[in-house]
Length: 138
Ligand code: AMP
Ligand code: ZN
Image 1 (cartoon, rainbow, N blue to C red):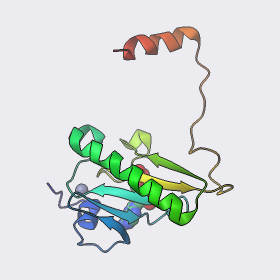
Image 2 (image 1 turned 90 degrees about the vertical axis):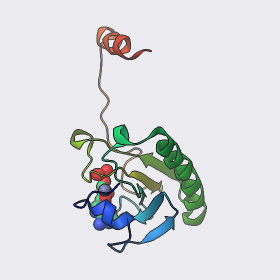
Image 3 (image 1 turned 45 degrees about the vertical axis):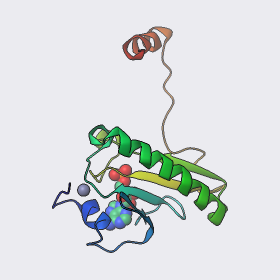
Image 4 (image 1 turned 60 degrees about the vertical axis):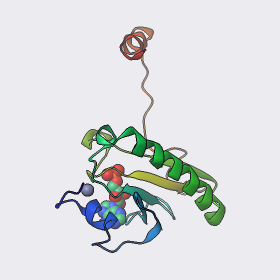
């Protein structure tokens, strides 16, 4: 499964060179070209899925297992102080490349990104919280 116009299909397929730090049959892991911190990497499945909704559950599971392995390895090698693992779906959520990828972001004390990666805290009323709770609980 491949999209001819997709840059991450070309990168994961090896058509466009990248700084690959890990590769297997299912994934290529590359250094981000515009990193948030030193070592910021992306897990890219070799098959094209625009986002997590399109991805088979089995692949989602493999991504998470690989993220844990790499975060452990990178933390040891880079001696970073913390680690963010994140993934954006849809423009509204900050996705800019529409081929699923998981961000692996080593964090360092005073790396300039704040103590977490960017969201504000809403002040919701009990009523508003309950409305969301009623919609979401399963
Ligand atoms: P997102 O905003 O979650 O879609 O993340 C896209 C990420 O891909 C950004 O962090 C970009 O810096 C990164 N990126 C875009 N093009 C390339 C490329 N050619 N090689 C490596 N990273 C890239
Ligand atoms: Zn693609």
